[in-house]
Structures are given as structure tokens and as C-alpha cells.
Length: 226
Ligand SMILES: *Cc1c(COP(=O)(O)O)cnc(C)c1O
Image 1 (tube, protein in one colour):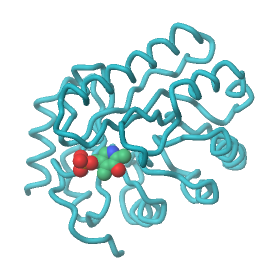
Image 2 (tube, helix red, strand yellow; image 1 turned 45 degrees about the vertical axis):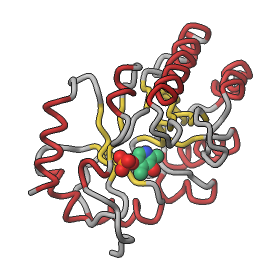
Image 3 (spheres, rainbow, N blue to C red; image 1 turned 60 degrees about the vertical axis):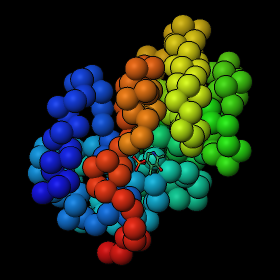
Image 4 (spheres, rainbow, N blue to C red; image 1 turned 90 degrees about the horizontal axis):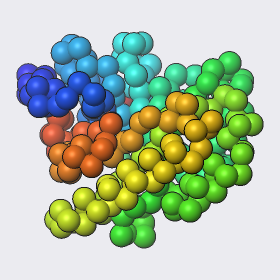
């Protein structure tokens, strides 16, 4: 019951313009089903194997979001069904997604992950690398890839000013790209930023898509085993 309550509570609070991805990593399929039964359809996982296993077990109209780091050799496992890949952080990965998209005869939705946090460890492209991708024209050749926007994670800090600054920077980059590259940004309208602890700030700073895990499913304590 708690999962359903949490999700309904969040939806009351959120504008209908915001997409909420319920991040279900490490939580069992039964919890996902409980959220599903409230009418929720967008779920996120950060590991390819867990995502594949859960998608096989759960209703087919779930929109699965791959929110974690994606290795090129694993694209093939999610290419047939994934709704949106949030963590695209190299041209190499885009080219593999293109190849798999062609094979499956589908256009795969992707977000370019942008590094905005202070920590070195987080994945993502720099702002100038993102601009270069658009300038290079490489995206026009990737006919089975649809670039839907940007994704970013703020620093893991209590400093709200810092978090806000990072989200604002990402929003600025998002807008700049839309203005500078109108021909390449027809589908470029999603800005994925904000998690359980910082989504209110992210929304104030222009997020269109938040990724909420613990605030829906509770703390992550154990690894998922099918
Ligand atoms: C786990 C995860 C989330 C959700 O985190 P919570 O703090 O539990 O809301 C969001 N985005 C990414 C990329 C994640 O890996």
C-alpha cells in the first residue's frame, strides 16, 4: 500500500507537464506492480540485466527508462523494448544504438548525459562535448536514434545553492542547443534532472522529467533477485 500511496501523493504535487520516472532498481516486481496499478507507466532501472528481467516479468505497456551507465556491449539486450535511454555519454555508444535500432527497425529515444556535478566520478559529457556533437552533424546520420534532450545529476551535497546552480547551467545548455540547432532539435524537449532529494529545485529550474526512487519505493537495501 505504501508504494501506491507515495506515488499518488507525488502526482498530486506535480504539474501534469512533468514526467515522473519511478526508479525501481533493487525493488521487487511486486512493488512495481503496485505502482503500476495506480496507473503509473514510467519506470527506471540502472542495470541492463535487472531491467531485462523485470521487463520480461511485468506488463508490456510499461515504458522502461534506462537511467544508468550503459555499456556498448549491452545495448542489444534493451534495444528491442527500451522507451528512453538517459545516460548516453559517447558517440561510440550512439553509433551502437543506431546499429541496434536499424536491426530492430525502431528509432530509439536517447538523452545525452551531461556532467554538471563537482564530483569526478559521475558519468557524462562536458558542455563543450555536447555542443561539438551538434556541430559535427553526426546526429543527422543516426537515423535510428532520436535525441530527446539532456540528462544530468547534481552534486551529492546539502548545498542547495550549488545544486540549483548546476541545474540552472544544464537548463541553459538545453535552451542554447534548441536555439543554435533548430534543425536537429525537433524532438529535443526533455530535460531529465531531479531525484528524491532535489526534484523540487530541479523543477523550479526547468526540469521536464524527474527520476524518483527512494521517495516512492523506500530505501534500497538488497539486490534484486528474480
Ligand atoms: C537511483 C537513481 C535515481 C533515484 O534516486 P533516489 O534518490 O532514490 O530518488 C535517479 N537517477 C539515477 C541516475 C539513479 O541512478
